[in-house]
Figure 1 (cartoon, helix red, strand yellow):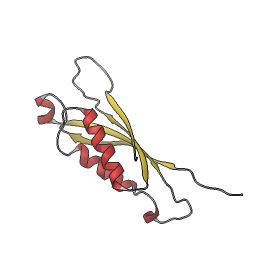
Figure 2 (cartoon, rainbow, N blue to C red):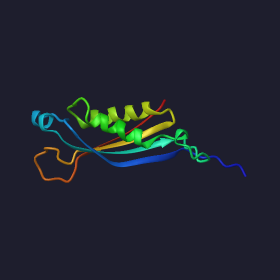
Figure 3 (cartoon, helix red, strand yellow):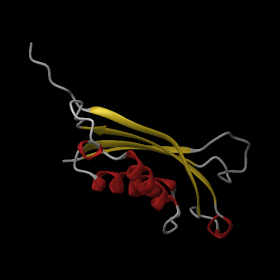
Length: 124
């Protein structure tokens, strides 16, 4: 019987850091928590038990934190795209990535639990 592995997924949920993103000057000055979920479609090597044979999810999480805490942008749509691009650039075994950026304290003027933007980006 021939068996092959289809691409698998590495999922990181709830990556949290303070960022200074937003349209309002107060958002850029004070900062607020951003929470990111990553679902990376990857070529998994299930026959190996070596870290070097897979995507290092600690590096993936650090890349997300670097974008959250990096240069401020106005829109979380822009931040979501930057995170997706950085994740794809991290490791060629990442074939696609779905990113959700949560901004639970978004100043929208009405009570709400969360504002989130989700994006899926893949290699050509």
